[in-house]
Image (cartoon, one colour):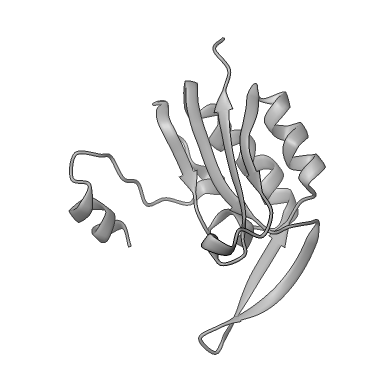
Length: 126
């Protein structure tokens, strides 16, 4: 998937890394965890969301998908079990607020996104 992104958008920087241990000094205009973040357990999500938030420049965007509510489920993906977890909307909102973000979009069960819940948050100018 990263190769496809690099091919389509060659001027952009694309990283493939474990988001739970991301250790970058650089900040970005957009940090995206699309259909990936909700495969982390609850506690990892709490910690990782803060890590990702710290990598966003002021006025930059944090974009991620989650489930619609606090839950932990196993789904089927092409015959293989796949773990999903989500925090509550209230907890995501609180973590974002604590990290100086305002929510621009919170679309629950977006039909254009495989029924995932879409979040777009903008970091405040500090």
